[in-house]
Amino acid sequence: MRILIVEDERAIAELVARGLKEAGYHVEVADSGAEALKRVEAAEHDLLILDLMLPDGSGLELLEKLRLGGTDVPVLILSALGAVDDRVQGLERGADDYLGKPFCFPELLARVRALLRRGQSLAERLQVADLVLDCTRRKATRAGEPIDLAPKEFSVLEFLMRHRGHPMSRTKIVQHVWGTSYDGLTNVVDVYIRLLRSKVDQPWPEKLIRTVRKVGYVIEGEGAPRR
Ligand code: CA
Image (cartoon, rainbow, N blue to C red; front, side):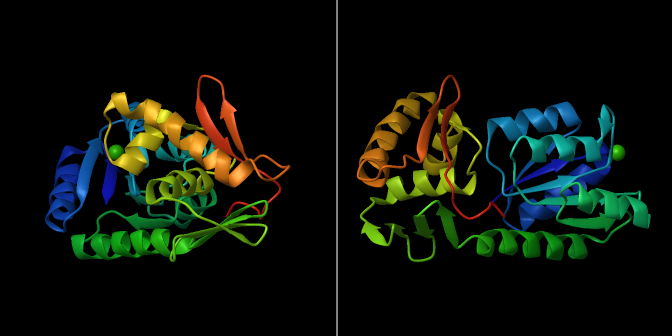
């Protein structure tokens, strides 16, 4: 589990990072909004802990940018602005939880755990048009017909479906599915997409997986709305 802390106050960032590392999480720290955007772009995270007053702007603006960009990573706002207004604004702009400073670390950890659990249990069943993934049983069907997918094929498809409607770069797919940022693997993505298309799209009139030039791949169709 990979957590990104966006916090410019070094003492707080270090305290939170140390505690989360001790709890077994992989932790990164960004000390500005720009740095945070770079890191979100570069790698998949399972949770963002976001300070609201950053040296280069407000955390709320950053959050909005992330959500508009299609990032659906859970976000926990951590801020001295504990007033009800800020809390409401944060939640309205796409945060998942809010903790006011000062806080005690055990409470932060409990909330982090709850958000991570929620993230995992949220989408056990993904659907795009008539293509359905059962992520618990790792089964795929299209129009009710079972599709036989190898584990990595399933993972690539699951990743695209979790971000339906948002093009994903080859690098992001490699990072997520193979857990590496080794660039030599990006061609492998094309191979897997070909395999997936032959199984998931080719037999049906509506094609769901699309190539987005100079970006990567996206899956979309007339399925159930994205949650
Ligand atoms: Ca700050």
